[in-house]
Image 1: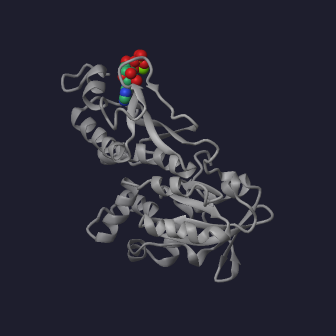
Image 2: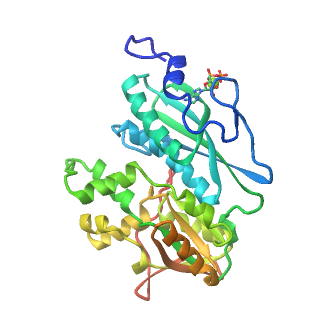
Length: 328
Ligand code: ADP
Ligand code: MG
């Protein structure tokens, strides 16, 4: 860390902003402060582990609200737990910062802490270094042994469903970054930007879908980029009826229906769940969505074969967008 008077030292940063976040006691034997955290994994559970990194200028605009950066860094990881049907319990945070500005850090850790507290996730350790702004969160959770949802569990004939609405976060990001278009005055624009800045990981739904859904993943790269991963993991082909894609009122208010569909398919960052479910269990999944007050939409099905096909009102079409690939 720099030695600027207005800046804090590394120890001070950890003590002030990253100690005591989230529930302590939920299996935390030892949290922040030692060389490693000690965690008690429940008996008869599998440990679920995932890590996701957000790089400034790549995963969020450089001038993003720090609250949103902290919130999103945890949200995208909670979404990975949701996709496995796992219950998130602990997180570690590797934070690379250009400087230790207490005002920025307060807002960042506030966003992180709000979501951590809401899900009972304890921040149990991390690493703090100086450099270009990069936020890496590792999430650890647990799931009753052998019951986690995988991408590979689907069977031919299973229905494909998604939670929530698609394309909102992509539209929000486009609004945030469009040159000369920083008019966020409409309620629709504000709602879309909020969907990018504060995504809602579907943790309760994912955990409750165990035993009902046959496969699941979360949508971080857009349906067109992510669905082929689930289909190929299950050794199947996927077919999607594009007119079924769930689009929000806000998205339809802010964009043409063609543009809205392009975002729903090709833009990422929605963090909704994509699920496969045997037809006989669709009603059970649907009832779960009603109970959790979450929209669930059937968008297509899995078939024997490979690849993904798309139809618009019964006619095969080739959508123009693909999911986000960091190296393309
Ligand atoms: P070490 O050199 O042993 O890795 P550090 O000085 O890096 O220890 O960290 C001291 C303690 O603070 C450790 O328990 C570490 O896990 C924790 N820690 C460091 N940075 C963060 C952070 N950004 N968020 C949460 N805990 C952190
Ligand atoms: Mg360290």
